Length: 302
Image (cartoon, rainbow, N blue to C red; front, top):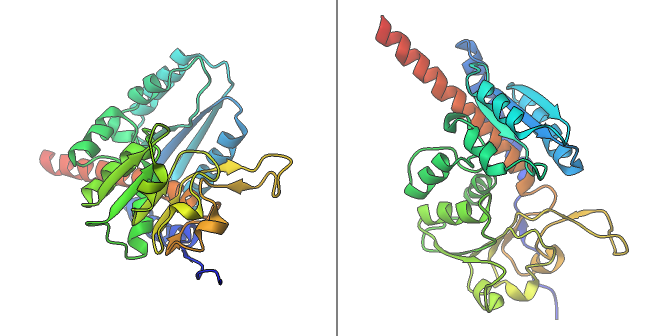
């Protein structure tokens, strides 16, 4: 018995490069109008993964012609001072997007921090105002990772209308907004989680699977129907003592699933670059909205 042909890769690096060219062009156009898009990134503590993510975000900003400000604080930085700094940035006209890198130290309540960010500068799309806008189908900032997934699906010509999409995971950052975005595009959506019974029976029905649970090998070859589109949002590290120790992997058993899926995203090089790209998109859109508002205000006073 021969293996089925390998799935086609959805290359997040290549797609990001294309999208970032457009972002850079739009940023250049804004600069010509006297406005440089600005992103403030706040990092509290010394989480190694967070440091890498933040460094990548700041570099991506600079490469695309956006202004970025990185502020680092030690792990004991008081919550009240962080909230006060966010309030200052809310009123800083050179900053159009505010991002506080998660996770935060235990003494800082993430929901308070997210709520403190002005919705118009919430480029992560986590504020309750933007979450509510997504639920109601109103304009707002979309969470970057599911936003990137939708762009990846569009890039392969995947019309989700009428398709059965299964989302593995129900986090506020990925799972829930992912389900809502797929619903808005008229997919039939099933959200699975740690209490789901008969998971394999559900995933075998799926035309599209988005795996976002943070657990290695959650989705295996025998759980995927031939030709399905598989998007791997997971980011895990192979533990010591196992083959490939220290390397990054997703939630999907890539070697097995790629034998049956029609399309699949790699880890790394899949969803990760797209998440950062959509952060740049949101920041740029925030600046463009500001520019439009300023021009409208100026015209109204003439």
